[in-house]
Image 1 (tube, rainbow, N blue to C red):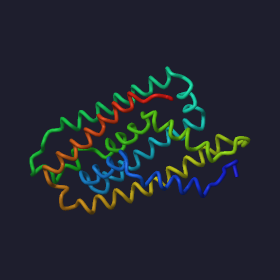
Image 2: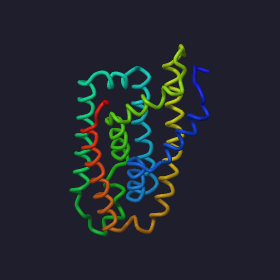
Image 3: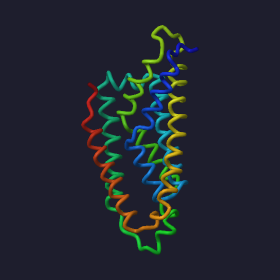
Image 4: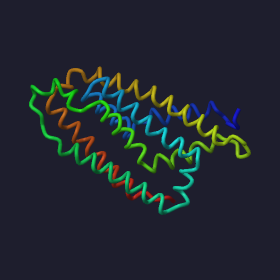
Length: 211
């Protein structure tokens, strides 16, 4: 159907990629510890929304453009890198809150901000676009007359499975961290670790090459 080959292998490969720990998992765990299940879920849904941008981009040829056009790749790369570094610096410079205020910290960071932070982190990362370009075509027949629909179908399957996994991670992390979520020191170090990770990823994205 739609010229998709080895669908079972695609689903299995996608699941293995989803469960592999990475920056997205760290971000979800950090937000789950900080804001509980709702914060972790918002982060997970935001990351999935950001992936949708790349799925549609791959389907209409944006990823191919990034591979062939140095100018387009450089612009998106630098925008994504700047956002990552800016977000990381904000986290690193976040001030320590009084212990009495930690209990109401859920209101300090709106869930919509957590959602869009995760979404933009993925949407502005050209490495994710290049990943979809390299991964999806392996499972679509070269002579398929419905390549766009096939790319969309595979991308949505990948995102659906990934979202389920990320929501599970958020639920587990929020329950496991229920006793330490209100710790002032833990909150500060979560922000520092996440901030350092974002800054590091920003520089990595900035140095990313098309070849």
